[in-house]
Image 1 (cartoon, rainbow, N blue to C red):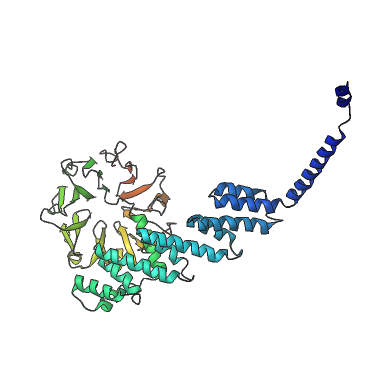
Image 2 (cartoon, rainbow, N blue to C red):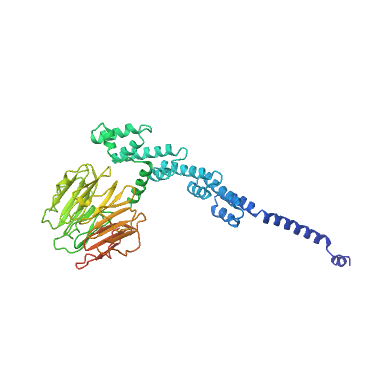
Length: 477
């Protein structure tokens, strides 16, 4: 009976406890709601400390940036600081940059970039480190670190045979360590001259900004495969990764008889002949030899080959140029110190290590510090050290920057710095529709052209009477 009596008693004590608990939760909840931004910052900081950056950023999502920007900035700063302390310098730099003028964020963004550059220098990635440091040259310690980066990069270039570029870089920082002495030795060892000022002073001065642009462009151009595709009047040639050469189109002169070639590293196509550079520096040729354009059997130490319609031209390891064919192009045979060549229908151009242009025909003349170019019958396009485009005559082309340039017939083309190809027909004033994909080379002819993509496929279009555009089944990988 006692149990029944107790079970019917009103539970005043329990209700009081529940009410007190509810009141406490209400108060705590109110405090949390009132200070939600504060707690979000604390939680974001803890998550970032353990490397959970997405979670940390998520905690900041509930903060009203317009009404409580101080809390949002504080939280983002905590995340960035933890990224920096954990060695995630790329992410830290991005976050600090986003914060702009909050606290010491601008300085911290620079410090994060410095740390990132130091890591790259230690791993030998001098190009990327240089690019990063050139953007924060104003910040304390960056110029000295930049000089160290360039010093190591230049010494590496000299050791790998690129002595002129290495010496030029050292000359631009000649007051740093023993940069001057190393540059002078490089000049003496390679030219016999003890006047480095005269040798290097004749080249264009390299500012940190210009050098940074040049290194970025050079890194992009290393991904190109120029010399792997070539078009003649009525034939197309492709170089496979295994060093074999395939061809299609008209073969009346034997210009497509390349199936026996091995160890080829570059190809070029004239009007009715084909040329291949072998890995040992010798050259092979097939096709029309009416003017002696295939007389290349005694050439050696070749590093680059090009053709005109009825000529073959080679750049030798010592920086000189040799030619054979209808027009001997004797002017080019007298050039020295050449680093790269390009050709048109009846002319050849050379660029030396100081980015100066040499040419056999005035229609090739272009202004600027050039590292590459190409030309058609009477029109040239050039690529400067900073990736800008120059032309031998006025053009309606809308391009401003590129990674590589091409010309042939009435067409000019580029591969831009995102590896997108673009080709312009000057006579009809139109751009061609090209397949999407990463382009790595283009060859332009008078009646057809070809684009090589990084998957090894070749897009070829134009006149196809002799099957010169039948490349749909090609895979050059």
